[in-house]
Image (cartoon, helix red, strand yellow):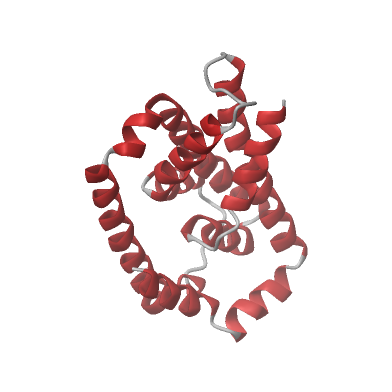
Length: 195
């Protein structure tokens, strides 16, 4: 239980960064509704579970493989550059649509955005290495990997739930804030700088 709580807190905090998934959850909730926002969040949480599982299974290999780290860093930089250009020039806030799409479309959107994020495997590998270094917690007993994976998903989903509730309850304020400060352009510039 302790491992589940620790990993949930780490996952919640690790998901707080403004990224494509959280921005998409806000956008979807604003323009398509709360239910569709939850579909994106659930799709975006599934890769967290998958990458946490991979991190547990291959922690030692991934942590020591410098070739993997260099390739992942290059992919992250290219993705940040692409996301930056998208947010800076294409302004997703202008793309309003109706709620005629099924939950499947929104789920797949979240799954795709989160699934192609190479930061997740690096993040969860780092967390798995850290957890293995703690003498109290071991990933060898059966319940510890399950707690690790469940905590990864729960923490991310809890944060996404908070984002959806705050966005939905403050819809006009969030919309005004996004438009007034051109948040999408600021996010785009930040991604380009990070790349």
